[in-house]
Image: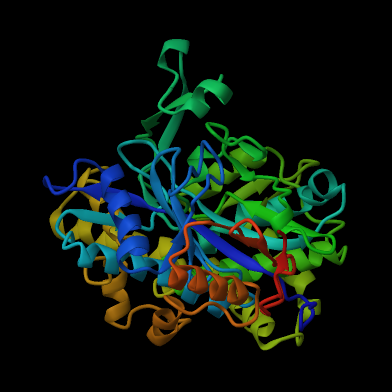
Length: 488
């Protein structure tokens, strides 16, 4: 079943959550996230827990599983952090509803565990004091040839580097990466011993008080396959479950968790259009930034908000000029759908306001809202811009509990742009999208739960029950539950 409209593609988001534990109800954050996961699968019966290891290092058996809403909740063994992956979606509204459903699933589990005073879970992308960074990975189904990463991706990088002017989550302070001596190399997980030979330590950077991006300080490569202590903007993936008719999974690591629904929608929407332009060969003369990783950090840290950078060949440019280049190339898609027209209109309006007065976007961009909150707190409390209390304000902005998070307080007061309704989010907690294979997989997962079976293996593109009943879900656009292939 092909896409129903030009430009439509499969999109999904994977979010790694931060977790803090207080009191003695749980011995550690690792114990807390295990309790959340077990509650969702064993008590609420909202998914089928993996009976076999998906990956012996990253996802051993029973570390998580697929949910009845088509998504996946699991604990990544490297770092023992909670992750939620949305179901495959075909439009931005559904994607955001399913992302926010993850917040509510986690919050409801914490409440039912009577642990709201003990566990706090955050949809942020940085640990200010520990130096860690958490991912919010974007996945797009993209037409790819053998030259995609060598010839096509360079035309995409300038867009990704500069989109932080509207997609950045904002952060107080900065981090400096310091090369580690041999005896200091982290060895907390077997994967470190196997793969890591050149690690780094992280130290606070006192030279920056506020910046656009939470992750810019931690990105070391533009493209890299192994990303442990080698974080890249793009991580090539060639898995069979995200391979369909010449399309493959584009796995973007340089992005961060947006609380603002508008910023989330604009980030994903503009990226999807730029990818369509790339597929249609409309970016042959796209700007190429000189020193892309330096530009990434420089733009994030620029207090003047001029966001200047240098291009290959010696020309200078700005993030807004580069974004306007991509906007103009994508205007050819106007009229292909209501969603496309919304993206183009809001993209142009946002760039104009960023050039005139960024603070007017405090109801729709995370970094602007956070900058305003932090500035008001500094003024009211008489603090210095580097006061440690500001890190707590930064963190609480991302609390996923709607009764506790600073962002959700803004939302409840009507001070944020809404893109989805609360009802959409509630439905997405248990119902999969109706127009992707997530619908078929979710139906099979429900059958597994009802049967109390313990002999099954579920993946994105296939389900195996009992070793002899196999469901092929290779077409990510097809919501139909297939007739199983049986083997005796």
